[in-house]
Every structure is written in C-alpha cells, then in structure tokens.
Amino acid sequence: MARVDHTERGVAVSEHGLKADAISFWEGLVVALASTAPAYSLAAVIGSMAVIVGFFAPAALLLAFVPMFFIAAAFYWMNRADQDCGTTFAWVTRAMGPNTGWIAGWAVFMTGILVVGSLADVATYTFYDLIGAESLIDDKWAVIAGALLLIVAMTTVCVIGTEASARLQMVLMGFQIIPLLLFAVVALVKVWSGDAPGTSFDPNLSWFNPLNIDAGNLNPFSAESGDLVGAMLLGIFIYWGWESAVNLNEETGGDVTRPGLAGLISTVILLITYLAVATAVLAWKGIGGAAQFDDDEGILSAYAAGVLGDDLGKLVLLAIVVSALASTQTTILPAARTSLSMARAEAFPDAFGGVSKRFFTPVFSTVAVGALAVAWYVPGKLISENFLFDSLTALGLMIAFYYALTGFACVIYYRREIPKTARNFLFIGLAPLIGAVLLTYIFVKALFNFSDPANSYTGQEWLGVAPPAVIGVGMLAIGVILLFAWRLHKREPFFRRKLEVADPSLLEDSPAVAGGAR
Image (cartoon, rainbow, N blue to C red; front, side, top):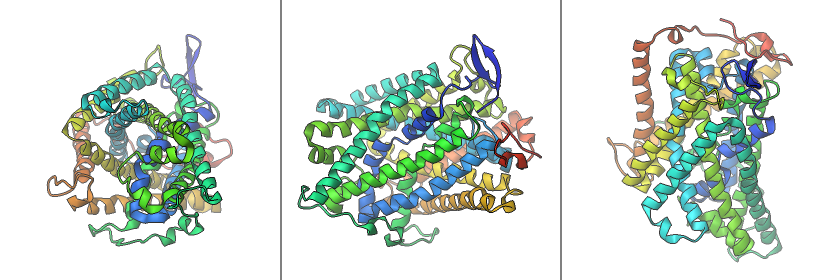
C-alpha cells in the first residue's frame, strides 16, 4: 500500500495522486484472475496443447506453473521493497540500472498494446456466436466495430476509477470460473459413471507427470522445437496477467504484502482451474477430439453442449465472452500504470504522468494505451486474421522477457540477504532465479524456433524468419532506439540513478513502505 499523502474532496490520495485504499485484497485477487482471461486462454490453447503433448497436457500446465509461481514470488518480495505501480520497471531500475529498467518497462507497456485488440476481437465474435448471429461473425467490419466499441467502453471504465474496474471484475469473474468448474466436474462424473461418449478415457495420474512429456530437442541453438518447449510457450501465455494486482499496489488497502500475495494466490487458483478443465477435455473425447480444435477457440463451447446440454452449455460460451471482455479491461491497467510510473520518474513524456483530480486515475496513460491498441488492432485485422495470431505468439516473447528480468532483479536486489537464512535462500534467491533462468531459456529457444517460418501460425516469412520473431524482437528493438533517444533528450535525473540493494528491514514482519540503500 502506498503512503497516504493528503486528501482531496474527502478522498485519501497517495503521494503520487492515485486514490489510496481504492480496492481490497479480494478485489485485487479478482483483477489478477481476470487479467489472465482463464476461459478464453483455455479455449485458445487446449486444442493446440493436446496436439503437442497429447494426454500429458495437464502435466505441461503443471510444469508451466513452476516458473510463473516462482516469478510471482519475485513480485511479492520486490513489492515489499517498492510499492510502485510501475512494478517491473521500478524494480529492475533499482536492481539492474536505469537502462535495463527502461527497456523492461517498455516491454510491459507494449504487451497491453499487442493484446487488447485481440481480446476485444474474441469477445465480439464469440458474443455473436452466443446470440446466433452467424452473419455478423463472418462480417469483418461488424467484428471490428464491436471490438472498437468494447475497447472504448473498457478504457472508459479504467478512466472512471480503479474501484469501478474492480467492482465490474467481481461481477464478471463469477461468470468465468463457475461455468468452467461446472463443465469440468460434470464431464469427469459422466466419464467415471460411463455416461460419456465411446471415445472417452478414464483420467490417469500419468497425465500429470511432466517426466512423461517428450522433451524433444532442448538445444536452444536448434530451430527444431521439442514438445516440452512448445507446451511451455503456450503455458506462459495462459498464465500471464496475474501481476495486474501488483500494478494496483498504490491503490490497494492493507499492508504492503497484500498485492504480492494476491498475485501468488491467483496463480494457484489458475493452476487448479486449468488442470481440472484440461483433464475433463481429454477424458471426454481423448486426444483426437481435442486435436480437431488446434488454434480454434471453439473447443470448450463445442464440448459443453455434450457435457451440459445445449442450454447450460451456453454458459461456457458466455464464460469465454466474459473472459475476453474482462481481460480487455484489466490488461489496460498494467500498461497504463507502467507508463505512469515511467513518466513520473522522468523516463517517459510528462503527459503520461498526469493523474486526474476528478477520477484519481492516469487518464492520459489509460487513453493512450487504448488508442495505441486500436492503432495496432485495426490494420492487423484488415491484413489478416493470422496476423493477430502471430501477434499473440510474439506476446509470449515479451512476457518471458520482462518476467525473467523481474526474477533476476529480485535476486540481485536482495543479494546480501539471501545467504542469511534458509527462507531467504529458497524463496527470495533460488525460486526467482529458477523462474528467471527457465523463462530466459524459453525466450532464447523460441527465437531459434521462429528462425524457421514454418513454425509460425501463418507459415509466412518476414525478413527470412517467422512473423512472431520479427514482431517480438522488432518491438524490443524499437524500445532500444527510443531508450537512446530519450537519454539524449533527458539524461537527468533518471539515467543518473545508481544501483541499489535491499535494506535488511524489508524482511521484517512489518516491512517499511519502501526501502533500499545505495
């Protein structure tokens, strides 16, 4: 929680102008879950994961959880040190210097721009499917119009206030998790009772053993992707987003551990949900049934009709609509808060650092994210549907990049405290380091994998490689160019900052609001 600096019109305001204690721990937890878009994420990848690893999709989800949970631990400990809504940007700057911090913040900012339009697109055409408007599904301009309307609406909610955002998510979350768990439970009960299709399979504990996954070629300097790496790439995408709760750390009530704890707990809830649904899908119709939905979000709605019946089955389709809709809104939050943090550190244009005196939110940053997302989405949609899929694949590269930097930053920042106790060594040192190393490996492996254009969704070739590599690396390269341009424009005070190390008091039961020593 950020320190309350003053009040305006009877509202407690943080030292940076955001509304203090705007949301509770539970609301932060819901925002973290909503940001991952669990129903949409499962629908988007479960068919592809079945193609890659077969019945061991639950094992792949379990394995992908490991670096996510370990990086969530890094977020927890770094948030104790610095309750800055810029999270990765602020923390990497402290531990690894302003240049690395700037490019990390840029990566977070760009993830929102890359994905918001795609989420709104999915919410729109899935809604058309839900109401049976097949003519609208096939009308590209009708989908674009609906997606733009959603982006405007969700951006407006983010502008109005964090409280409004969190309350909306509290309502929407029930429409996501409950239908998913209902689907999983009913499907598994029918399989075990013999009331499932003849193609069903009884779940087996071996499905949850990562050692059963064919690791394939794990050489990161080879373009041939092993099954393990392919599954991990998908896993990164569907777990991504939980850190939105931490981006709201300056607006969350309670002590400084609450936002980080919300991030940790959300990853565990996601793991349980993902394992249950993946097991149910594979048990219902086996690998063959799931493989028919490779790169097709229709798998859950198609299966739900058989599991729950036509009427209740629509609840799952509704869950996917709500999931994409909710994530459209919550994904704007971390990108806007990161650009706000960068601006007030004088690492970004001043306009991004403004906070509304009426709404106590970063209005310019929020609107800018929405506008840039539209600028990316509309041309991409008009170019081809496949371009949007390649954009989402490139998103995985950006996520792995800044998550890994956060893990390394935790280890570097707390380096003097890590050897002092077993707890420090395991949870502040070893866990974040393992998470960072795994994500770095996946990032490098993915780049070499995409050196072969055949490994992208489109199979197209851009500059001799697959489009996701060009998009992902291109966005980071643009960031490097802008970094040097900003250094020339405004070297002080941001680029004069020195490396910091954690104050031992941060690990006490009641840590300070912020800490750090040069």
